[in-house]
Amino acid sequence: MVRVAAHRDPQWTSAADLVGSPVPGRPLVALIGLCTYATSITPRSTTDTPRAIREALARYSTWSYSDHVDLAEELSVVDYGDVADPDGPDGFERAVALFDAIDPAVVLRVVLGGDNAATYHAMRALAEPALDEWGLITFDAHLDVRDGVSNGSPVRQLLEAGLSGEHVVQLGVADFANSAPYARRARDAGVTVISRDTLRSQSLEEMVVRALDIAGGRGRAVYVDVDLDVADRSVVPGCPAAAPGGLSADELRRMVRAVTSDPRVRAIDFTEIDVARDVPDERTVRLAALLVLEALAGVRRRSL
Image 1 (cartoon, rainbow, N blue to C red):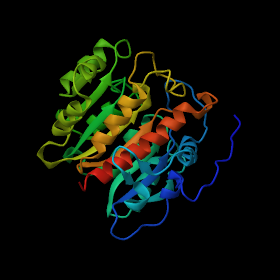
Image 2: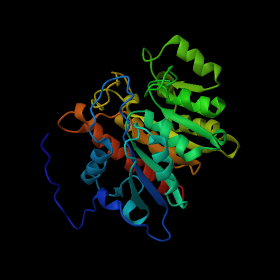
Image 3: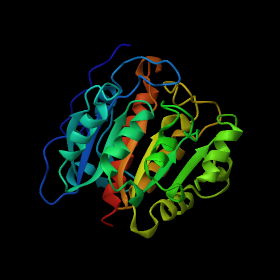
Image 4: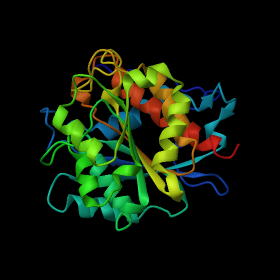
């Protein structure tokens, strides 16, 4: 894959320049890398996805045309680095140590996966021992309640660790991507499932509000998992399990900005990208970088 250096223009601020030191008086966002892959159901490369997403930020500016705001003048983004070998021995403990080192003033933690096992590590590291006081929203084609320990089981593992199913909402669940036994498992746990068909028959923003009301009910903090295989395979070829008929890039971008506009959302992850499977134009990684920017734009909307 040939990379072309981005042209530097003093009148065009690169989104990569958002990452730096805290600026007093601005909302603070943390960036964390958590590149899990070892337990993936689909064999994948060990390519460093968080690094690729960070690099892709340089392709974009900091100006949100729809909100008429320059994120470079509104937010602080601090990169806390990566959890070393999260799949290895004591990987979870290393995740806890990194999350504990994050400034308590941070209003949103942006986690760059990794496969979906990153969700289990990150949410536990952030929420325990009060996991039962949190809610979870997933944007995912899959229910992620499989048996065993893999990228197909983080929701089941979180439920078993104490997360209340009544405060879990899964948006974008697809046909022919799950099984009847696992659908019953999610239903019996009290999980709210909103299918792709339902999303397309109603306002996306209204569906996000509904999800937040369920996951964030009774004053709960909310963790959001964005598994990019919820999107159509044409826009995320670097997602091993993505299928035709998923959400468009625009639909996913709108929903990410909407969900992060709510202050109950304390963390969001972007998972299930294998950089080695991406196409030469890097469309999967570039979409992930745009979703990071959408999340930042959502945080900025909290003050409106």
